[in-house]
Image (cartoon, rainbow, N blue to C red; front, top):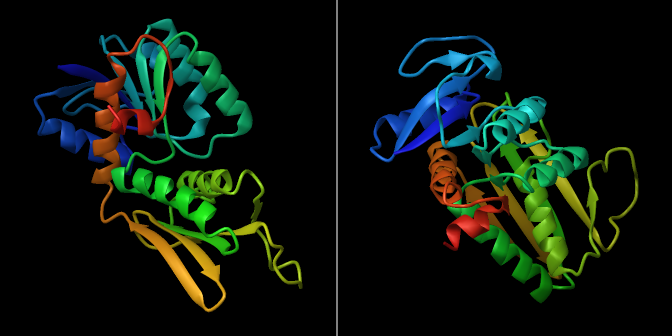
Length: 249
């Protein structure tokens, strides 16, 4: 049985992970981290220093603000790590890379199987439809803080790779009054209601439009992917892995 420390245990994604684990014989959550301490099916602490339970892996669905203590605790206790938080900066990614020299970790902006297939298809279409304009639109619930989503950034990276790195992200057209540039990719974000996560990549050519879209009907798809990543990473010594490595296993 894989023993898990769940960071962000009181959040919507943390509760979803806990629900799936409660019905599984493969995993056990031994402790959680959240803003407030709680007692339930497992103890939830407000600080890593209070954790006394032994574990195999940390699953993080919190915020980038906790990255430093998460990495410190994982390295200090030689724990595997599944990072499922978005909003990381370039400096954050440097810290993650440095940590991967000592521990094994998986980092992804999206743990959905469908999204990761979408990334591969988007990259291929960007190369095949090399004279089409590309736009990316994402929508999430009103509580999501970062924009655009980590998945939207992943989709941009995919189409940009398909266009040999020639594309440029465009976030604000309201302040300008001019036609789009050939290689710009408009990045649009919606925040409303309880939307779990919608993403669309639009390829628009002369007199025709091709769209790729993905709709997350519930948060369970991300929780299942993170647990699958936990099963994958416990067998690794050190290094940084992508969700594609997990799916290709």
